Length: 434
Image 1 (cartoon, rainbow, N blue to C red):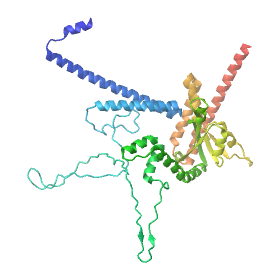
Image 2: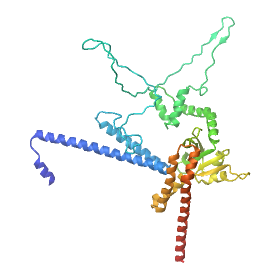
Image 3: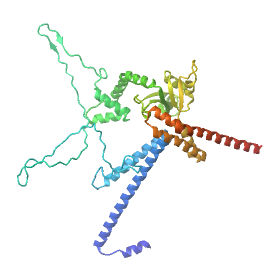
Image 4: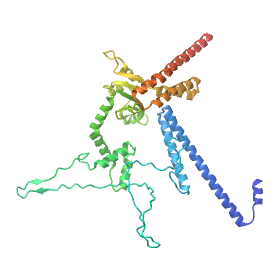
């Protein structure tokens, strides 16, 4: 009925109808662009929320990691679609938000380039004579803009020619010794090997993809050869790895944590048990004194274990001493036990983040007021730590004694009160039931 009335009200003039169609198309394009921007904003906010949840609550599950990755991919595709249809002139750097601006991320900002990046100056000189009158030109200033470019990676073959010479008098043969190679007998040079290792272990680029990239560059390097190079490189780097590990594990303060990892086990598949995947563990031991203005460089040691048994932790920390900051994993208990001299080899520094996570998980599932208050009380301790981060040890100790210690004592007193209250309630219900 409505469509019939609209059709009756349309003009008969074709020119007017074309103008109306053009106006509707323009309005439709504007609405579509607005919807794309809204979708983009929603994706950006979802991604921001996911990252903030991970940052605030210390979530490390694979599910949240995958969710963040999927959101990032979806947001990237949406941004590409918006940029493809955007015909407005690009003016990077205009209205760029401050780094601490809590608003949603801007669509564009001027790229930030390190001061160590090489600069190349190209001068466009109009000459010495005026093109209109032929008069002499003098310099009155210049307009400078920057263009960010990249030198494309390129394969090259280095031919090492060892010239042979013989003595005219005694016929002695003389030749320079062959230079050492990162992998004896291998064709790979140090720069290429470093590129392969960084691409695989830092950029998570599998070797089969590197094989395809190198093929586009004109070098057919079989995947088996790449695997061999990586394995030999690990062997060559093992002395350096051992030195770094000894230095970090010898620190007087270590942070320890572990995470599950899926490990292929062909024996399980051969026995028909599932997909041939079992769960292993990756243990991380971290030294990072930067928050308290320490002098030692930060570093991390990663150790693989096929299971979660305590023997692996005891083996990893067999020579460690000092303070160990970790969660409540029972495998650490023997490390905190007193030695023959009555003193423990490692002092326990319990992790507030793990304690807070338990309260948060309970609050998220039950909306418990007690859990919410616990989170608020712990948050005040975090505020103190945020203010003293990077300060010397004396300043941090004084601030914690003045501000944190009273809050911690009140927190545990409050916790005991909550526990006593719940026990009394349970006992009361039990007596009533009897």
